[in-house]
Length: 311
Image (cartoon, rainbow, N blue to C red; front, top):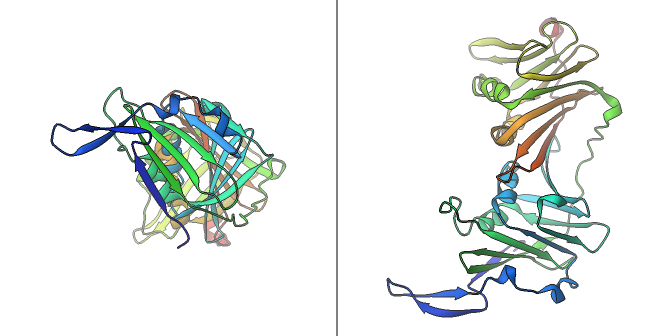
């Protein structure tokens, strides 16, 4: 079995009768206790007052079972890939955490993302108003599980999630110096467009140009072709930097998972490089008003027919 987890409810606790009969376990707030003496054994220690500031971002990249986690002094990057054609990265900066320690230059491990999200929401995904679930996350190193201590209302759950040796992730080599075109849109404009896309189309064609139509989304479905244009002076357009006309196609099936991040975001940066590779970078504001980023990379699908690439 390559992964697993177990949970212990009410660590360091004493029994108390529940009004309905069964025993439940009550505990002193574990996350507020001084356990700094134990921290030296861990390669990674991170604490949050509100676990949803982590779980919400991770849900935005949850389209495959496993993820690779990279931790440095700057924060945590969680990467998910599919078919060597699309990669999603969630960036949680160190400043998001109330406590963040990395003992080594970098810490890397592979984990079952589905199990991790289940554990992070073990107290429920919709807590009572005014109630927050706190998190303390510890990782000792290669071969050790990821330890989660979750506390809500004085009750603590301890989860241990098995980790794996990290696999090599794709290097899309998306260098800013090779970016040809870049625009920044308010997310509401792109959300509306994605909701209206013809999903019978296998591809989404993206046109970016210094001249009209500036920014165009096209589909080619059962009902024919359809186009949605954004003028460069649109109220939704926050930045427009296009140096040359590019017309590229991307599989809708590969782009569809990125809509999870789109729904959560307030702005999106859309970039294409000299190979036609696509970067979608979503700015997401968490419940405490802090900014996190989720980025999707996608390789182009095919050569665009000359007749359909003309503007």
